[in-house]
Length: 114
Figure 1 (tube, rainbow, N blue to C red):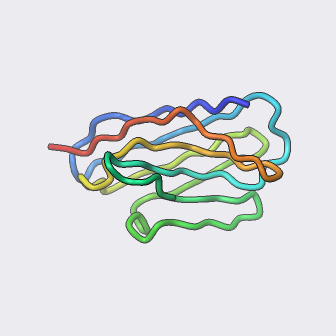
Figure 2: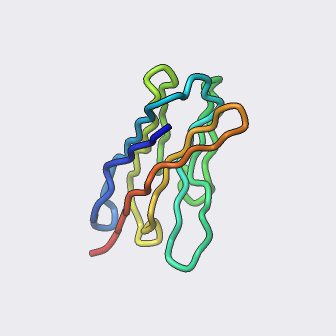
């Protein structure tokens, strides 16, 4: 299973970015999809999570600014990030969960700076 993430980059405070992630390989029964991030010196933390049954969870720091969406049939998950803040700067990782297994993308860097 491979996860390919894209969409990171440099953006000014208040700007927007959209991250996308596509899975390929032997992944057939997705239980959940999500985005995590890791800033320098910090642990990896959950940003947003989505399940095919429609359950969605966001970290309090991104509620109202970020929106996660996913398609289990297309094996894709996206994260629309609006009103970005410098504290959103981190490497963002997508993940897919299947039958107790967790798969990770390679990470995409988001830098919010003027």
